[in-house]
Image (tube, rainbow, N blue to C red):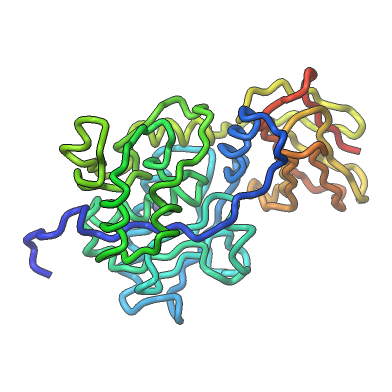
Length: 360
Ligand SMILES: [Zn+2]
């Protein structure tokens, strides 16, 4: 490659998300409740460790895979530097990895969004792919594309699809541009990745961030307004923006040491939590038997159980009752002498009383 950079961000291909159906919610649900559910339903509970595996050989890999991995490694480091409550660990076992990263050329760059990585791809299939050469990708020295895909894995959507962005598209130009080189997208892909807006409740603390790592670059003719973007286009700065970091910390505040309160059998714990907030408890069983952990009250919640293996938390089970009338409930055999951690994240308390959690 000549060192003269004749490419720019607007000539580079873009991430195209896999087609995942929206989870159905009841028709009579309030807009406020629906927005909070949509904002949080794909996020991990805070404190989750995401273990990732690279396809270093085979059909999901590429010849110069180590040079590609170097860029993705650097992107993980950028996320680690933000110091959020999610950990990332590379592992060699594909069986144990929640995140499986391929480099199948010609298949574009994409990732499933947040917890969808557990639900949609098969157990040994890719949850993320880099389908072009990252070492010649002009954005952020090849690191911005993997930072963006890891952002999806953390549960963040495309920022240009934020309804608070107020971008007034020239749709004809958008269809023409993205159906041509280098993306060659279908109408459905253009709608899914650009024109469709997601629902926002704005608990992220900012309206719209055109510098977000989750925002594409757009040439001026694609935008009719507002000013000055219809004249300048939009070109996010390299790397994570300050807003990106703040949002990540809002959903995933750094977890601190210290003892967790213990969830004792048959003693309910009251949870007074604002939307998006989370409480963690330790479970230290004195007998080996089946235990049930359940939330109570009119709330949308996600409940996740981990086993604490020398400080390494392994996912055991999870349940999510958002959008339904039922409560989260997990029944599992727990073993005397072992230690477990229970995390409860609230989407919304839609009743008049608080939520509680109990173990028995
Ligand atoms: Zn994307």
